[in-house]
Length: 190
Length: 412
Image (tube, rainbow over all chains, first blue to last red; front, top):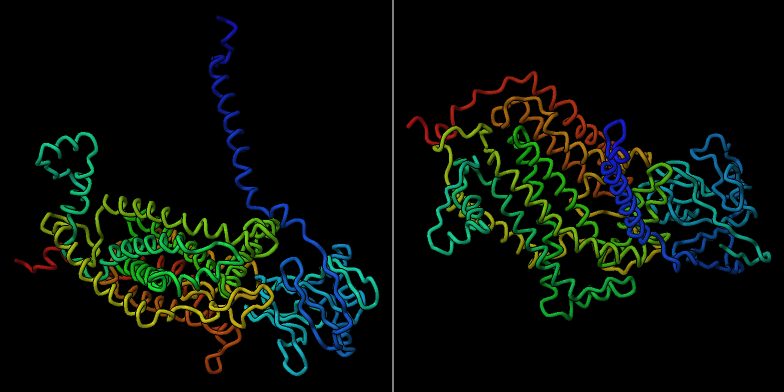
C-alpha cells in the first residue's frame, strides 16, 4: 500500500497516533480552564456599585473611613498646613513618582495637585500597597509615622499627607480611586 | 536494610490472602520485623508522634466540619456555637487548635534532629526533600485553617499572606484576585479555603506514605550516623521501637493535654475572638508562632518583592540541603565545628521567631529588632550556602566507631 507509507518511513498509523494524541492534549488543556477560571471573581463580585459620599460633616484635619467595594476608603479633609507640606516635596525624590490616580493617565506624576484634584479633599483607597493592611491616620495630637500622613502598623510603611509612600516596604503610593464631585459637598466614588 | 521478606503465612487464610493482596506481608515487614538500628534515642520517636498528630487533626477536623459553617456572615458565630453549645465542642476545637501547635512543635524537633544527625545525606536525600514538601503542605493547611474562625487575625492574616503573591511582577495582582475570588478577602475566599483545608490533610497523609516508603529503602539513620553493617547492629521494630515510641508519645500527649485543659488559648491571639472587620486592621498583625521566623525575615527587608523572595527562599533552601553539606560524616557528634554552627543556627531561628513576635518598630535596648532580624536572616542563609559547604571541607571529624553494636555494647 504505497498510499499509506511516506518516504521517511512514517506510516498513516503514526500520523493518526500523533494527531489523536495532540487533539487529546489540547482537549485536556481546554477542560482545565473552567476549573481555573471558576476561582476568579464571579459576575456578582464584578457588578460592584459606586458610593456617594456627603462631605459636609467632615471637619478640617479629620479623616472618615467609608466602605467601598468591600475595602476601606479614606476621605481626608486636609488642613492648609498638610497641603503645604505635601506641595513642598520634590516629586523626583519620591520612592514612587507616579500619581496612581485612576482619574488621570497612568504616567501622571505624583505632585500634590495630581493626588488630590481639590487640594482640601484627599480621597484614597485605605489599602497599604505592601500587603493590604489598613494604615492608621496621623493627626497632630497622635502622630503616626514620620511624614504626617499614615503609618501601616503591619510592616512599618509610612505615607505623607498626600498618601505617597515615603519609607518602608510598600512599593506604591496609596491608590486614588475614580471619583467625581457632584456638588461642592457631594462626591461619587466608583 | 529492606532485605528479603521474612513473612511466613501461618493459617490457610493468610496463605490465600498472601497471593492475592499481601497486606499482612507488608505490615509484617514494615512495622514488625523491620530491622532498626539499636541505638535510636528519644529524638527518633517524633516520626511516630507526628503520625499521631496528623491522625488527631484529621479526626477532630472531620468532627468540627460537621458543625462549622463556611460563610463570612455565619462562620464566627458557628465557631462560638461549637465552643458553647455543641456537646464537647470546646474540647474538640481546643484539641484541633492546640493540635496544630503540637504538630509544628514535633515537626521542628523532627527537622532539627535530621539536621543534627545528618539524616538528609546520601542515600536519604529524597526522605528529606519529601519531608520539606510535607512541611510546606502543613504550613498551607495551617494557614487555611487559621482563616476559618473569621476573626480579626483570621481576616488580616489571610489578607497579608495572599497579598504576598501581589509582589510577583506583572501578574501578581491578577493572582491575588484569583486567590480571593473577589477584589479583597471575602466570602468567596473563606469558602475555597475551607474546601482546601479539608483536602490538604489527606494529601499530607499520602505524602507521608511516600516519606515512610523512602525511609524503608535505606532504613533509619541513627545518632552515630554510620551505616548498619551487620544484623547485630539492629533490633526488630516491634516490640523495641513500638514500645519506645509509645512511651514518648505518652509524655507528648501529657504536654498536649496540659495545653488543652489548662492553657487552651496559650498559642492563640485574643484579637481572633473579635469578628472580622475589613475596615480596621489590628494594631499588630502576628502570625501563629510556627511561622514567626519567616515573618521576621519578610519584615526585615524594606522592599516588597525582595522581602517575599527572601522569605520563600528560606524554605526553598531546605530542598538543596543534601547537596550543600560536603562532609563525609553524617552525625554532628563527630563534627566538633559543625556542632557549634548547628546550635548557633538554632539560636538564630529562635531570635527570628522572637523578632517576628514583636511590633514592627520594637527595639531591644539600643538595638532595633529589625537589625537583629537582619543579622539572624543573614546567618540563616549563610549557614546553608556558606558554612555547610565550607566546614564540610575544612573540618577534621572525630574518629567514627567501628560499628553501632561496638559503640553500644563495647568490645564484647
